Image (cartoon, rainbow, N blue to C red):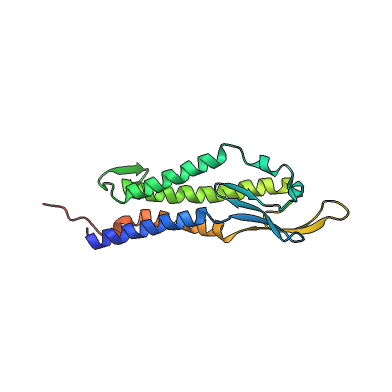
Length: 193
């Protein structure tokens, strides 16, 4: 195993971890109220941010969408993923984990597992948003609707899955690929005979 190639791989994994952290703080879905010129709702992987600028009654009850345990759970998830990625950088590759016909070393399983779980988080977020968005004025997952609050208050509301969501899915895929091709990137270990 080339020491240079091993360090190159470690840098790639750290870059993947950094990109995961970057996408963690990017909004994955937003709801923009045109008349008020406010991005009223931003959904992040760890929760939801509401900014109605004094017009909170437009989205009355939206706080109840997220259960109280969700935000702490997702921060624990991020912490465990970060620890797993850091541990994989120096974990012994002699330990094998069998997944059917596919046998992965511990570092491969950790990196690929984090990537796969992050893809599942992205897919789950899209499904949950798609299920909950119609509860508020029949908002679509992506698109524009016209909302009337009273005779004098009406606006178009534009909802969209943001770049951060798609980028997060790409980061998950990158980590899966890095994990699966770890041995190819690092090179073969020379055995003493």
